Amino acid sequence: MVEQSDRAPLLDWEEIPPPDPNQAAQPTPQPPREEDSAAEKSAPTDTAAGTGWSSSTTIDATTIIIPPGPTRNVTAAVVVKGDGSPGRTELSGHGWDRPQPLGTDRNAPFPGLSVKDQWEEKDQIVAVFVVTFDTRSGNMIEWCLPHDINLDGVEFKSMASGSHRITSDFIYFRKGGYFGLACFANMPVESELERGARMKSVGILSPSYTLLYRYMHFLENQVRHQLQCPGQYSPLEAFYEDKKAILPPTGNGLVTACPTWSVTNISRCMHPEMKITHPAGCMSQFIQFFGEQIMVLWKFALLRKRILIFSPPPVGVVCYRVYCCCCLANVSLPGIGVSVPELRPFFYINIADISALETELSYVACTTEKIFEEKKELYDVYIDNQNVKTHRSHLQQLLRLTASDKEKYRKLTEQRQLLLYSQEVGEDCTSNEEDLFILFFMELNNRIFQTLSEVAGSADPTLTGEHVRAMGLDPQGDRAFLADLLEVYGFDVTLVIDNLCCP
Image 1 (spheres, rainbow, N blue to C red):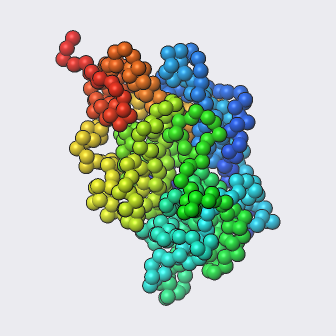
Image 2 (cartoon, rainbow, N blue to C red; image 1 turned 120 degrees about the vertical axis):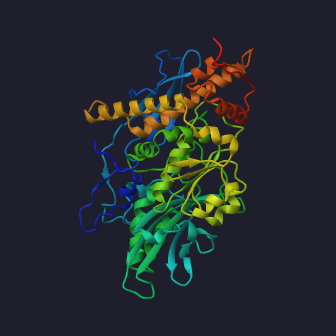
Image 3 (cartoon, rainbow, N blue to C red; image 1 turned 45 degrees about the vertical axis):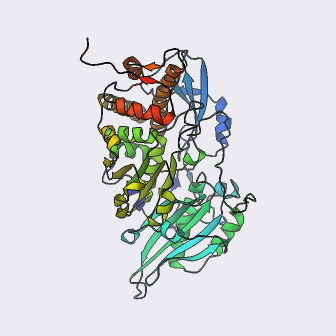
């Protein structure tokens, strides 16, 4: 196996130029279809690598749809043991699908968008726009459809601060009740008026970011077209007419409710918005980049803290870190988390978002603007490179890794290595690192909340050191974390920790 550089996860992937359209298209992983999930429920199942707490005794199973990655679609069953606690996790699905070429149909109306993507999931796009950098006026909206839509601020969200130093990037962001995806490109030109560089972004808005990834290749193709042939908007006009959304008559045009899963009784933490696609190895590089620190991030995510990630461009890499952080807090037990603030992914933010963040109780976001570090009232946790810090005194203890944190990370690393080995020798072609990562933390969270629910509903609602160890936590080192968890989630439980000095 070839190790990826940890200088910046996915940086190499981000800066690989697209293939020459005159050359043969290279196979690209094809995103799975959403409807495949239902069909796969009857498929034969294989048991995934365990997450440290496995059991062969089963009573019931809660079906969870794992967010599809670029090469497979998986249905997971978190199997519940006889005592009601989660046991092993089973995966079923197509496994690794053979990559299909994208954009190879010369008759396709939208170059860069596969034939399959062009007929599926219509009526999702709210707006299409082109943003340019003007040497006198700065970032400005050059063109958009529909012409009367309010895009104030999009010119800064779709062209991140510092982007002039890179050649290409992509950005996920929020605009009011919508989510956006924009592709940026920077092309050198022999023009004094443009100061030797032409920079543009082509983007779209949608009620959710569930399907935005489908249009990534089209946007990349169009931003380069706009750089080479400025002002030719006919492909974008045709794209909008074909994909434009039919919005409900709410008066303000905003969609306030997220789309729901087709599977009932599923945790609200597993939002359809989590189905953001990313290159293979995203989770792997997230683990390699943060190492044991992901256990610290896991606690802050579970406590629904406001997490802000700083990094210089390219920002697409950092948007994937936002996604990975959100995956740390997944819980599949019904009723858990209904009274706590929703962990909302904001993706890229800039100074124009300050007023919006002032009212947010819980979020994960990223930025390229260093000034946010001084705005301490806007966040609880600040991440700069691998440096995780907090200015909240009561959260300082959570920055220290406990013995149980190191043990859980060791288990995750061990299972990851076993999975990689089984794939290398051809024994396992159905599981991958993203599933392992998501299911590891989901099962960990389920175990904790299952225990807390059982204790809270018992005749003696006292949480002892034995309970804490059964949850995979450290009775001493995780006391502050547990106290915060009980308060945030409203468990009426008395926390009693054994005194280490006593026999």
